Length: 319
Image (cartoon, rainbow, N blue to C red; front, side):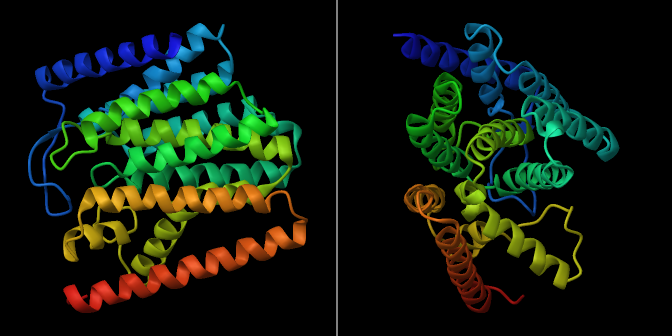
């Protein structure tokens, strides 16, 4: 019953946000880099933060440093969606938020190289999630896949209060109702993509620390492959990697190849879920087998990715 009440509450809050966004003109106008052609409400992903806020209150204020970091990250991203803030200010808040997450995860009690690795992964995942939020439904589908995998692991290992995951999933479902459409009612905005990345990253961090097994980072393999190889290609073309663009594989599939964008979003999430299921089985094997699996998986994904992207570029573009 509590989950039904939370879902209805989140749905109502999202509708309330739409009225606010419409009143204050919080919109996303299409430009030459966009994959959409009509003005759409921006920032609907703020519901991810609201879901965690409800959990935080009902749970008796569990994971306070994580929640404070999420609040800072969400707040600065929401303001940036509206006003476009300076990069220095955003980076300062992002850095502070990652520090708070590290404190909640007790990374400062770990070896220095684990702390450094944690920061690199955190920054990479948050930016990748933000960059990958470019077509209807992709953030919702991918987040549901990752969150679902974390729920499955948690049923066996019990590394986190499951309600944090359940409330997050409910929030993503509410957002998906308005975003997983041919003509979306709203987009996640930076506030949404950054917030959900921060949430899932925190849960994933707890899992890795609980098990001491890095193989679970493959729960983000599909996004990772697209983000990393896109950056590599843009560096080779001497492009500014911090500038807006439409050169991810999912964008080429939707814009140049003309594949249905909702199908692309579904496949990104579905393929990641299948990979995650394989990871769950392999995680029970010895370390050498896990390493071999990880290398083979990343190589195969890279080969398929590079071939498909090269094919689309050759057939549909002059680049």
